[in-house]
Image (cartoon, rainbow, N blue to C red; front, side, top):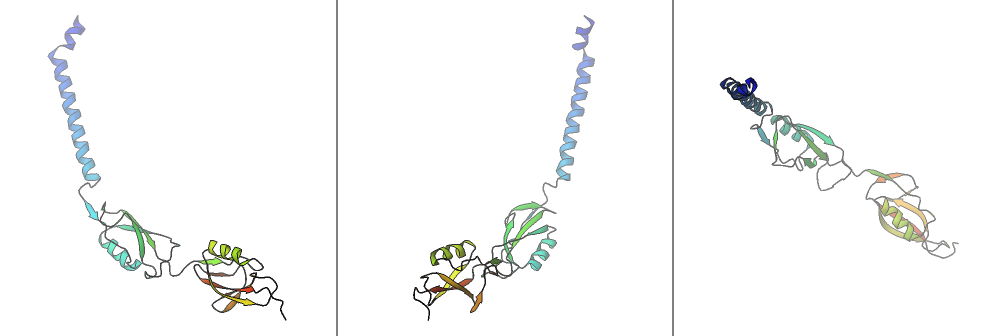
Amino acid sequence: MRLLKFFISKTLIFLLLKAGLILVGFIFLLFIGLHFHTRQNNLIEVPDLYQVQLSDANEMLSDLKLNFEVIDSTHFNPEIPPFSVLEQQPRASEQVKRGRKIYLTLNPSTFRKVSIPNVVQVTYRNAVTSLRAVGLEVGKITYRNNIGKDMVLALRFEGDEIEPGEKIPKSSKVDLVLGNGKRGR
């Protein structure tokens, strides 16, 4: 009976109200503190850095108190100056907080170099497939007396004969010397 009276007494109700008010106040202060700590209203618009040189991008981002990290790129675009920004993450015009890291993908200075596959003594059709697979293009085709018709006899790059395994820039044109199917004299 005493226990039942305690649960419906003014003292318990007063203590519960007091505890509830303290809990609500604590939660309110916690949200205010988190709002200031996470800088919710302090956003910066990310600038458009497309085709901007790395040194200029560094200056622009430093002025805005943003950090950046360069991501290596293997996609060379000859129409854009070397070491300029090809892509950025987050994208231009997005809202970010101070100190945010912006990831930049740069245009390399040239195409990366690839090894010439061994296509000597291989048919023209197979040689073209192998060269294209590594990112090279077939240039000028010349013929020389050799019994192997359309058999690759030699490779040339910029006028000089090259050997399989040598490295040249990707998307370069490789000239092929093929056999014409006639006996050499």
